[in-house]
Structures are given as structure tokens and as C-alpha cells.
Length: 172
Image 1 (cartoon, one colour):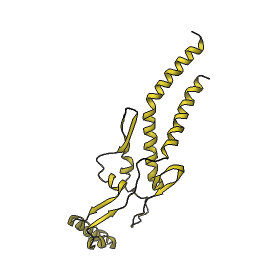
Image 2 (cartoon, rainbow, N blue to C red):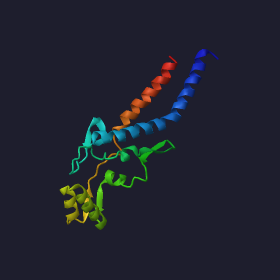
Image 3 (cartoon, rainbow, N blue to C red):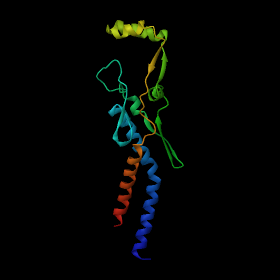
Image 4 (cartoon, one colour):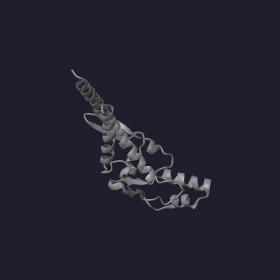
């Protein structure tokens, strides 16, 4: 065998390794994109545009959905297999689906007691209003941060091309 056939065999071997690694790389790209949504305070769609999240009524000087950062940190690769990568949020973060899809929360007597306690502690009229409200439920607007988006494909294409270039440069 000549030198070119040995190089070609090594190239094929490197390509096979890359093919096995790509799903994990794609998962990492997806996780990074979904975490980026928190910094942009909206859902990134194709062409670099962002569907902004509805602001909260109480602007506390922090970003929307970023009180402790737990929700953002909870996004990770859940499963890789059969050519599929599943990215999701930790199952112990109960409010994750409510924020992503929107919904309602019933106002319970326990919540009203909490609002009274917070009013007594802080003197903030907001908590008094929440304790005295006649509403039966809170409406949480949809603030999509994870899901299908056309912004994913160009990122995955760029990543694939970058990795293929690394392999081809070894043999040129």
C-alpha cells in the first residue's frame, strides 16, 4: 500500500470518531443556545431575531426568569441515542414547564398568608395588594426558553464544518 491509502484509512477512522462525537457536540450547542435565551430575555429564532419575553410587573432590576439562575443551570443533555439528542430541564425544577408554556396558578390561603407576612416584613404595598386581591388565580405568560427553533440548524452546520475542517487539515 502506498502512503495515500494509509492517509485515507486514517482519514476514514478520524471521520468515524467524529461521527460518534457529533451528537454530543450538537447537544452542547443546543444547551448553549437555550441558555443564551436567558441573557437575551427572549427566545432566539432564525436570522438572529429574538421573541422577547413579557416583562414582570415588578421590575426588580434583574433579568426576566433570572432570580437565582437555577432554571438556566438546569438545562442539560438528557439523552443521546439512535441519532437523537434530547435536551431538557432537570425534573426537580417544577416551575420549568409553567414558564416555558405559560399557565395559571390558583391563589391559595397559604399564598395569601405568605403575602401578608411579606407585607409585615417589608412594608411593600405590592405584597398587601397581592394578599387582598380578589383574583382566584395568577396567569403566568409563556416565556419560551427551550424548544424547536430555526436558529439551531446554522449553528449545527457551522460546528460540523469546523470539525470536518480540523480533520481535513491533518491530511492536506
